[in-house]
Length: 146
Ligand code: DQA
Figure 1 (cartoon, rainbow, N blue to C red):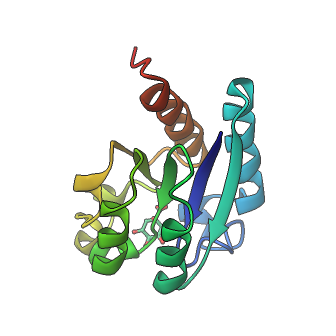
Figure 2: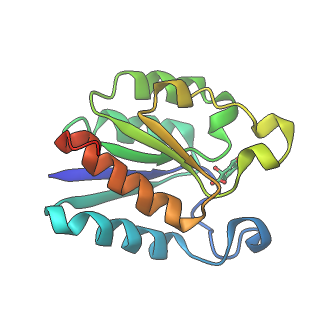
């Protein structure tokens, strides 16, 4: 089985992007965390990062065969309506992750147009949030929700 790890705009430069907010881990480091978390189940990780909403939409449409997804949409959380529609037709559970605690920040980050469609949301826990999200996805998909 393969899961999708999707990161949106400005997340390809993690490590050197406002490290006081997003920390020093790179996207590579985060991919490794996720791979490590799901490898015990024999899952593989297909990782996509793009700064373009259209590419993210294409990646969702091309990955209906994955078992589920972790999505950090970056600022597309705020008004990414086309991404929302793409996720609405993604046939598998997915989990929204944000590194920073968006509710401790500017008010324009307090709502996500995507989150109502997510199986769950992990916010403010840094790279650990991806690990927890991946673990939660495993539980969603295997039906073990303890
Ligand atoms: C983010 C939070 C968003 O508000 C912001 O636009 C990002 C990163 C996070 O992971 O904390 O790009 O998704």
